[in-house]
Image 1 (cartoon, one colour):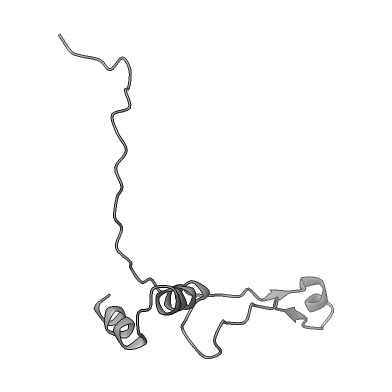
Image 2 (spheres, helix red, strand yellow; image 1 turned 60 degrees about the horizontal axis):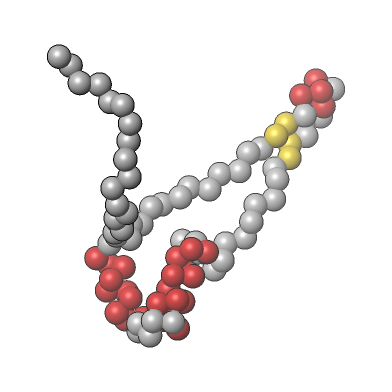
Length: 89
């Protein structure tokens, strides 16, 4: 006859290693238009302010800057070694 599950028993914990991975995050902003103003002959468009990047004109996110700083100042990994590790990702 067919066996059916009747319960679940905890066996153990395991630590899973997830290697670092890089992902490009696209940032968008939405522009809004006042339709009533447009019907009255005025075009009013508004865009909300967006947060400034951590480093101007850079692809670096806050998370990536924090990781580099931790590697350098806490773990003592020189920047040239970090650079070679980033190239391997």
